Image 1 (cartoon, rainbow, N blue to C red):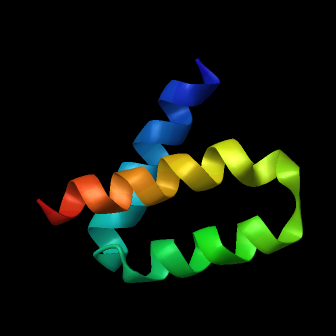
Image 2 (cartoon, rainbow, N blue to C red):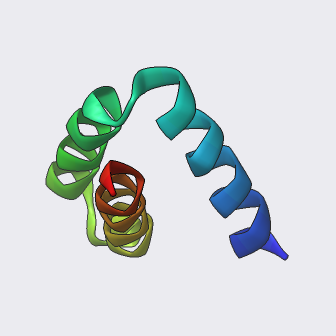
Length: 52
């Protein structure tokens, strides 16, 4: 359930920022803590998928 909400939120973020800001956010999260690693990978994967 949480993952679905996260996915929806990330897709909306990608649409608004066209991916560039999302990657910046992902990089910041990676620096902060390991807790964000799964979100981080998901955001980066979503970014690359949106580029197709």
